Image: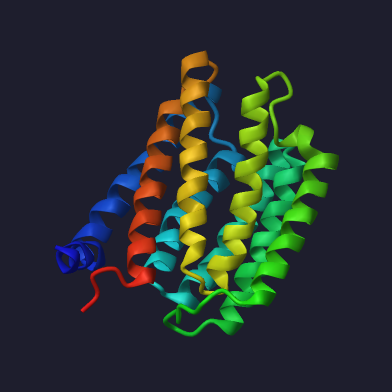
Length: 233
């Protein structure tokens, strides 16, 4: 049973189907955005490219491809930084720069295939520092990330998912399997937030982003199984 699950998630068939569905969702969200604005501007194009790159990068990381995932990750993070700057999300601009720096580090330090290692004491210290710095970013630039008129639980969830994601990003590039547990938690929180947005009727594309988060969650579960070696022969 364990080996069967491992082989399915490791197979090219799974990756191909996941990627086809994921890219289709990016195309759908771009199409909805185009219909909403009526113009094909630079931001729409860069958002589309960034979305495609994001799907490819997380799949490569899940399959433990260090060098290629990190290299594409740098490019994807640059697109995200540009897009968030154009959207006026200054807090997320800093996150984009942070991710680009981590991917650049990973490009030079990770091998062709990621070697999964145990979390060290220094990893814990650095994670704590990242959490503190992330809290400072939220304090000063949170208005560009968090919805100010939302219920308190939504604001708390936004803060939590922000911190979990930036720490998980660091641990992932360091080759720590626990990073994917962080991404699973983050995706669950994002699912709750997106369901809230859908019930409020505030975004016509919310269902698309909800579906994309489900795809990211499937990839995170796959990655956790592969990185922990569950069912590996």
